[in-house]
Length: 194
Figure 1 (cartoon, rainbow, N blue to C red):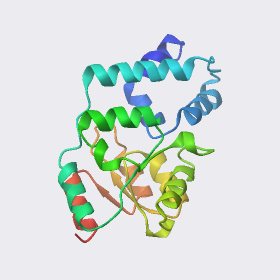
Figure 2: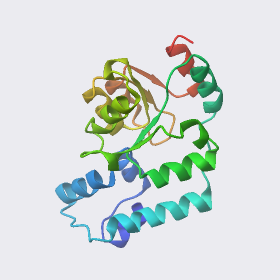
Figure 3: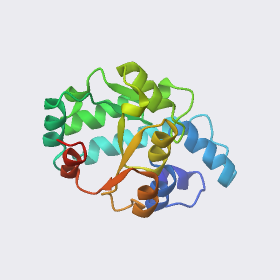
């Protein structure tokens, strides 16, 4: 994203992309750029960003969050339903989860912002996922790595855990939006009473 934006004359670096855009749908990123930068994205802009992102993911790979497989084992053993509700395209979710080996765990439970009218920080994707799984929003717990996602969970009436392990995480801002905050995924089962 930073490289593509620089190619379009917008000064930004990786840190500002993480701070401003992580967790948001492409439509909301384009709207934010228009309102804050006056940037009118050309018609091919989303495709250009996606192509660069997919290329980088395939070239550099993706590592699973340390301990996530064991955490998912415990959650699944307890009979708790899981899903991925992402601002990313279905193809991106399939690529990243496939590269980490986690895709089979979420088959049939992948939900994308392209399936709803508004992306995060709007609650639409979380409400859609809960409805598809037949679970009341108040019975859902969201684990999020972005402020936009935490805002969306709160707006959906769901409790949220901030996973603030990334070096670019704004821990204080995320903690203010979350029910709990963790930086080690192995802490999640304890918060679920498992």
